[in-house]
Image (cartoon, rainbow, N blue to C red; front, side, top):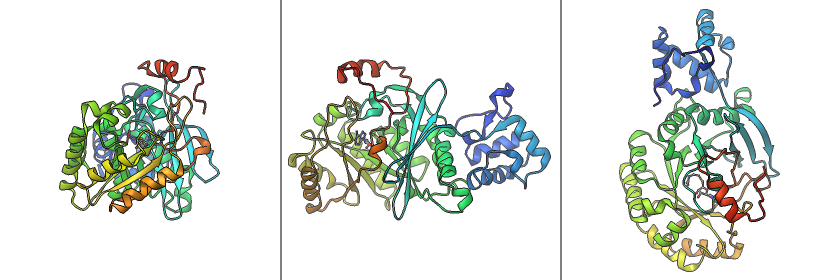
Length: 381
Ligand code: SAH
């Protein structure tokens, strides 16, 4: 958890209560000389009532409300854009500091509503097929900027007023590598899980990682959530070509960490994500490698994602017949395999299309643009 002092140094540096989980809030109230149970009262207002004005917290005494307004704030990110796709998928562009922006996507389905949340401004991992990677990296999001995405979406979806649960699942599958922003993501996920936060069960909060092996172990020790692992290739040569992180943590190490995860949480399973790219990783030989790999994970499932193109990419989506053949090979071999329907692609809200506005500090976007986009076509939102 981030250490945050209760007393801000200047009036403009008011503490954002969205940065604190329940333990942090209790500390904060204690430091203010208040009873820690006040933390729970205020949490309910923030996350159940979606209230951001202390003045409306009617069961909190007037003197305390005035004190709170003087030293802290409830500061969700500002909405710069709110777009709805023809299939109902909704995407918000949220403003961060210094001209950066990130994206959050809501995917409604008949029996559930999934919110796809970002963890970083850009991403440093540079997976070749991901538009966030091509944008370079700026910084980690704070806990408040992460949980604030859920707060903003819940507010737009009318959760507080309609007393309905529109967001039933949260997936950390937006922009960024969540494990690379471990501490802040952890605070935010605690708030997703907490009954006085968004109250989501462990199987409804999923963290997706490209495979930061030591942090997978750390995560399983810290919190009960679900794990998704971006695989995309079942052999090291191809995986390293697609995902440079595979050089640092090759498949054997990644899969050993997955086995440890399951050993610690015997009733959970892991979802292995596999984005199908035309002629790259979608051939029967690749399916057979994947089937072999999955033998060690009989309780786990594979989520096939048709590649979502973005300007400047060299990859193409596999044809429907190839996707079908790949899926059939897996299913016939007894591998539980889901095909993710592409949602929201008319508003660039599909997997790997989230780009936001990243003020790149790695210079990667410039060098990649010159390689990938000879005509200088930039990804316009
Ligand atoms: N960094 C994390 C989470 C973000 S991406 C991770 O790697 O898991 C969420 C999923 O979308 C990942 O499986 C990612 O590999 C996949 N993805 C990225 N770009 C894509 C694209 N262009 N088309 C389809 N899926 C993509």
